[in-house]
Length: 128
Image (cartoon, rainbow, N blue to C red; front, side):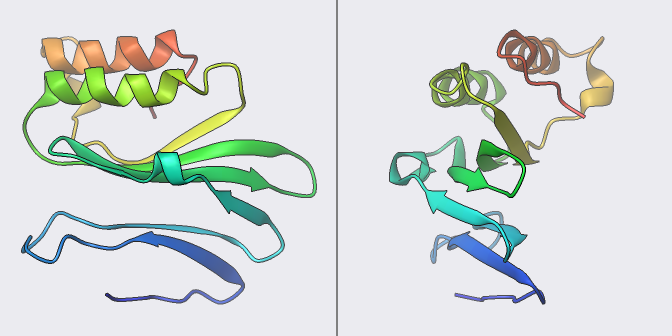
């Protein structure tokens, strides 16, 4: 596994699947002055996506953070599976970051993109 350090930041890692040539592994960096409590039930790896997450506490606020990487393909199944994870935190401050491999510019032309955006918005999450 590779660990990349950034000055004044701590990191949490979900290391790449050794048998995969590319497209696996996550890192979440946060300021050293903040506290991060990793939640093991958010360490998820399946055939649709992988994610890690936890509770981030800063001097001003506390929120939940989920970092995600979606493997290419299986858009419909991904949305269904990932929204089950997200919905557990719908009553808490939540930030979802990562690479969804979804082209949001195709919102009007792709039913899978529409489903993803609509599902995120229904959980008060707004894709940027």
